[in-house]
Length: 113
Length: 113
Image (tube, rainbow over all chains, first blue to last red; front, top):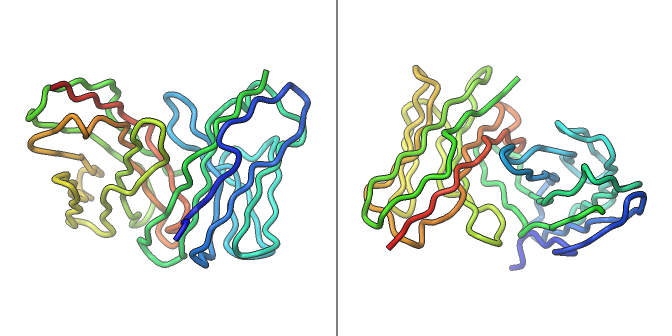
C-alpha cells in the first residue's frame, strides 16, 4: 500500500518557470490537500479538494492552481514561479469523517532561484 | 479564525529526561486536536489525537490531554530517547471540517545521549 505519493522530491526552478507537483493516493480518500512548510510558520494550507471535480482555496492560494479530475490524483501547478515559493510542499489525504487521520506524503523540496 | 500557538524551540534534552511541549489554541466550537511528528528528511506522521474535551491521546510513550477550560493540548513524555529527536507540530481541525488542519509553528527537539 503506497499511501500518498509525491513527485518530484527535489526541484530547482528559475523565476518565471512553470511546473507541476504530482500527488497520488491509493486509499480511495475523498479529501486531498496541499500544504507548504516554511521555517517558523508550521504548515499552511494552499488548496484542498473534497472530491473529484471540487476544489477550494486554503490560507495561501495565490500563485498556485489545482484540479481534481480523479479521486486518486491532485496535482499542484505553479504557473510562474517566484522566489517566495521556495518551500517544502506536502500533499495529504483523508476520509472526511470526524477525527479521521490525515496522511501526508514525504514532501517535495522546491527551490526557486 | 483558528490558530495554534506552541512553545518555541529548539529544545535540547538528555536521554531519559522529561519532555513537555506546550500548545494552546483558539477555535470556535469543538475542534479535534492533533500532534504530528516529523523526523529528519521525512513527511509528517500522526503521533496522537483527541477529538473531545478531557480525551487523552497517547502513543509511543507520548501523551496529551484535551483541556477545553485552558484551551490547551500539551505534549508530554516521561523519558525521551535519542530516536525522539524530531520536529513536533500541534494542530487542530475545525468542527465539521475535520480534514482541514491549522498548524502551530513546530518545535524542534534534540535528544542527546
